Length: 493
Image (cartoon, rainbow, N blue to C red; front, side):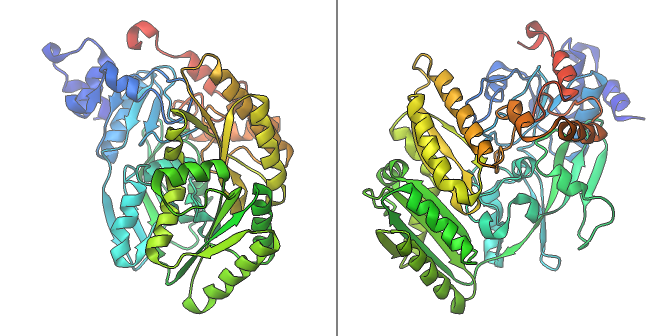
């Protein structure tokens, strides 16, 4: 007997809501784990981006892979789309439900299932919080290397969906480098194991295809992540400059010298002042820009690298170089960097956190252009970014209550994307495409590129039932058709 048949046999007449989809979902899970109230649907109708909220259908909270399979099969039988949802910290609109789909929130699938030190991996569920995993591993001598600024709240499943990075991914690599295997459920309810614990799994690297697919190929239900050993020794430097150009040139100089720091983060004066006022981390508020650089490894070698970075900074007009003298000071400096986005609440209630990548050699020029773009559109910009890999994160600060301000914000954001692409950059370093950069995909990719991406997507999901209307631009994807199947507003409006 199929899942659908078993579910439908459990539905009794008096208990029926009058909506067969809802009745079947409740029978597969339980009534308390299928939400349809307006507050829940409004809350899960948007993510942390500045894009308008979507329209959610029933919200399901599965706790097992079998329940995810049941939800997928029920949704398919009713010709409804599905959208996976983690913590909702995404910044590109990737988790916004379009067309009243069934939302599958995996936050209750939050167990660390196994720590396998022999193989150097941990099996976890997608709802595990990034920082919780590292806290669990630290006493064992390990951590999870990808460390997005939202790591206190973002989930491993979301990290997989967006191939998330973080400050320390300069040396250690982004999420794709730390995922060994994935259990996923496709839109048709099939359970697949992608990748494996072997050093060279047989077949195509479908694990690598799935990481970063933003929920368009299916839903992650289990993840095998690599264990990264805790660092034996660390040195953290804070370099001050009179302008962002000198800071950016120092970053290029460090990499050109063959040094691979664990992290290199730049903040301009505006965000540095906001951070210092917010957490008293010890940042100089009179510097035009600061560079937070960190090296790690064996005790014998890192002092040499730290001294080389100091000298390169001085050669590029650093006004001051400070070495963190204790673990407490180092932690304070990183706390300042990780809370930079929250610090802007002192200035305005809203912000648009952008994400593009440019060649390191073009960092200084693109930064100058970003300041000019902000002035042209009359918006306030603060720059804080992963300088080591050229991943820019301009913060456009605004008050959403101001008439017309969102139009200016989006116009400035579009110009930043154009400037980054013109410099030889790419659309995203870690936030994903979502709905934010969808319309710019054909500036980066040819029609043939987009056609083959769409063919790959259809190989997993022939009718684009999984997270429709995302990533691929309209006109290049069957997602256009799926969006037109949206449920009338009077049903789920």
